[in-house]
Image (cartoon, rainbow, N blue to C red; front, top):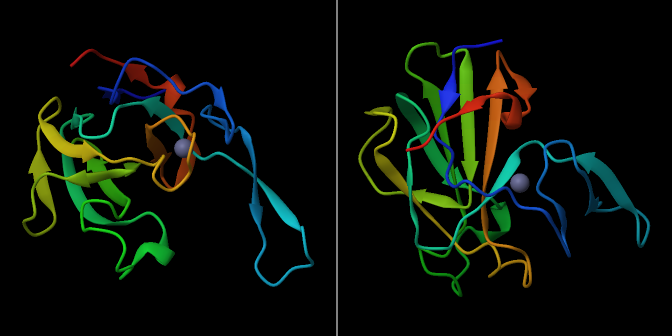
Length: 164
Ligand SMILES: [Zn+2]
């Protein structure tokens, strides 16, 4: 399907915990703002979750341009109770060989604080995993990896994975 191969953040995929499954397409529910009490909207998990301990440096998945970084949850912006390192981050990158392939990482912050885009070779540490259990007590700490090809979500498990 593609020549893209990725070096995953770890070798272990998150199974089922109190918050659901880490598999691509797993059913999730979220509270719907403004809807009737107890209303929840069902949606599907857009990525694949890899079990990683907070503080772990993870390798860049492929030769990539880091496009931009942001935060995973808008309600954590300017939250005085959270340090800069605690605010859960997101990192967007594209495959250097073919920018039709775009990846998004959640619950990680970049090591480099320079401008964007910047180039990182596959296998080079580029981000530090954060504690998502700080926000969701009891969840297995993990790094969420989302892959799109021409804007369409792809199951990361179908992408060939390599050892760092
Ligand atoms: Zn996820």
